Image (cartoon, rainbow, N blue to C red):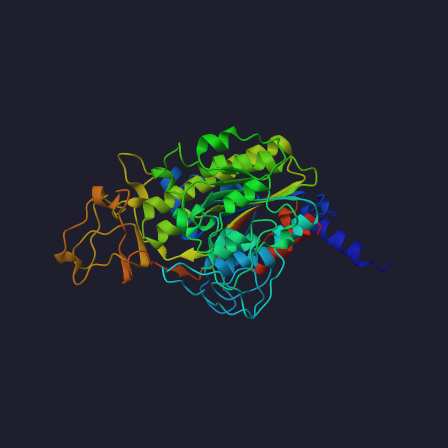
Amino acid sequence: MRLTLLAAASALAVLSGCASVQPPSQATAHAPARNIIFFLGDGMGINTLTAARIYAVGEDGELTLDTLPESAFVKTFSNDAQVTDSAASMSAYMTGVKVNNNVLSMSSDTPASAPALDASGNKLAGRCGAGRPVATLAELAKQRGMSVGVVTTTRVTDATPGAVFAHVCHRAMENDIAAALVPGGAGYNAALGARGLDVLLGGGSDYFTSTAKGGKRSDGRDLLAELAAQGVRTVSDSAQLNAVDASAGAPLVGLFAPHDLSFDSMRDAAKQPSLPQMAGKAIGILANNPKGFLLVVEGGMIDLALHNSNARRALQETVVFDNTLKAAIAQMRSIDPDLKNTLIVATADHDHSLLLNGYARRTGKTTPSEPGVLGLMRRVDNNEIKLDADGAPFTIIGFGNGEHRVQGSRGAAPHLTSAQVSADDYRQEAVVRTEPGYETHSGTDVYLGAIGAGAARFGGTIDNTRVFELIKAAAGW
């Protein structure tokens, strides 16, 4: 008798020792994700992740991100560039559309147009002459009655957080990005609904304050006062954030620095809350909505440290980001024990030029007495410091480009010491010299991990625009 295709498949499965009937995949077995948390480590490329793992727990240890059950590699090129900036990459995640570098959540035909400056050098408000806004995950969530929050260690008007809720033709239009957050005000993004964002925490108060009061706004507006007048709770230090009643229904805006927040290792804890504190408070507030929530959490200072070719600060910030992910998973498990209604995705927007030089002896984690991966290259066979062709020692971590490059023979320069290269603010050497603070992104794919409802949809090598589609599918949108 002729076998049907299904019977044939079952027979082959039995012959191969596999079960003849496979259970439904996680992608179809889970109910739609009601809660979505999107973690973005800005600039957290795979080399940075690897170095952070060694720094924190040694070569054979695991970061929280390493333990997420589903994973993928993500292609990051933008509409007009092989190497993306944060604006284009985060826009792809938030909208599913490839945009040009420097553009936030607009159509692909939008040219990056920088705003004009006033006589004092402040950026004037402006509008894009071409292109159109495209819907973000935040706007789609708001249409469904969900709560939406954004937490970052940079200013909330920076490219990555800005792509969640604003539509501008250049990331430098930070006054416009701030105005997009004020319901009823000029420049408000009405697609966020009458209420606007439910939680916004980070830095960047300058872009909410007029130049007359020391801020960046030449239009004279005080956006924090406008928000407060509409019943939005505003806080400006750690104690005020801790005192916020998470069960209360009013939106919350917390701006804890005029510009970016400090590196976590340099943070004044009384003035600036940590990333885990901010994310925890945001979850506590957003989880009150029975229709669910979308929360975007950015570890933005990873990127700033890498642009400074400062590996120690970058690895410290990566570990803080990873600890925030760990705390958020635990907090959500207390609300949704099996994460049956919660999808958590963690990834990066782009890579940097950080590299791990070859054949280093295993170092284990970094301790106060041992520099670990931050130290000098040592031979595997005898632990002696390895020398380059000029007879000079060099570090395990280097950069493809950066501000610190020896001119001429490295052998003629003072030799590096372990104490020097493991110092907090040491800038690792680079192959190509750049201006200070201008080490660049790279075009390498980035890692993505996922857990919870619909996480099994993520796998293989995917485009960053595909992440948007997979999140929507997991949510049943």
